[in-house]
Image (cartoon, rainbow, N blue to C red; front, side, top):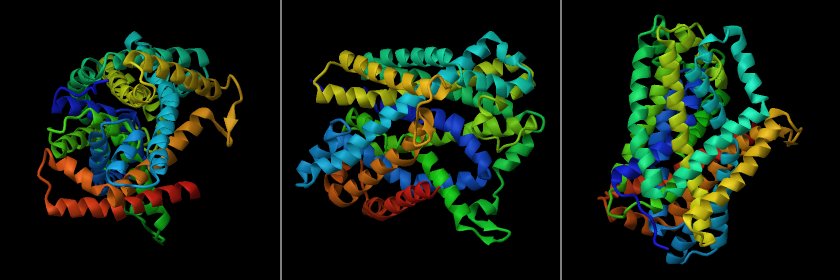
Length: 462
């Protein structure tokens, strides 16, 4: 079966950026900024992107482009080339852990996607503008306990995602990225400008531009390593979720990326668009809630509880509410198709299925897993594992363990075992200086593993 490819470098860039720009940027990044001191969190986040995530991103895409295979077999293909032993072990931790993580991610991601669709429809109908402020929390809680609505909205999202993936790389996934990404950033720009012109927004801007030393460990009672570690792990976890590192999506997209295209430029563009989206999301949300007198530390409820209150008090609030939830809806679509493609690609390779059959199989598997999560989370059945409902369990395992373990495996694999073929692949399309090679090697051998180990240890302690 002939391997599909992206038609251009920009097709790859916008598609990979679309994978990264999702709920992690628009929903998660702003409330973490609120909880960890605005600029204090942003600076740690940017430092992690530069020092740890950039080399890992190059490594993951390069693994895919070198192997031209799925996320499981890629390690074996490269491992055989360099005479590596224990190939099944590398494939297990680097590949099968990614498969488990992606399956878990899809099972709960479509639940949240369903919430996004529900609130978008509420915005379209205008109902969102008339819910009493005191009832906004009740409205969201009512949704999370309504099994039928969550299931219906999630399945609609799943069906749309399947159709896009069935259409293929060029006609489905790439075309979606090329069309939706410009629209996303137009909406980002409009909402950012509106947020900054609100009365009282200057307090939110000041919050985003002020460093609070306590989040770096410098408290009134002396230095707190725990506080610094909490900020670091929150920023590192956000960076991995935001850039889709350790999920196999960049590896799979890398396998569709032409060896003639400059990987360095592509990665820089992807990181730029992703970081810009995260920062603009903070600019949209933080000044808005300050203007409305809402606490920046409100947490995950900002998007579905606090923001509707903001829109109700805006001139032209209907338009801004509709624009925001459309932004969230489109960003969620670009993320779900990339995660979905990881499993589709795997089944096509492993079972020699055509794209249509593989996508339908993934849809059925995901539909079952998502339904079980919805049953557990909505309270229809008391299904709990380790004291957690299936939604909380899946989210916890993915954000804390699977992506981290996959990334750690990837760093050790490239840093210690497969540096030569990876650098050779990168050099086919770009000049690689000796300084970058040293930086790349040191990061993957020492810096990234230490950072990821701290993340795992802190997760275990917490």
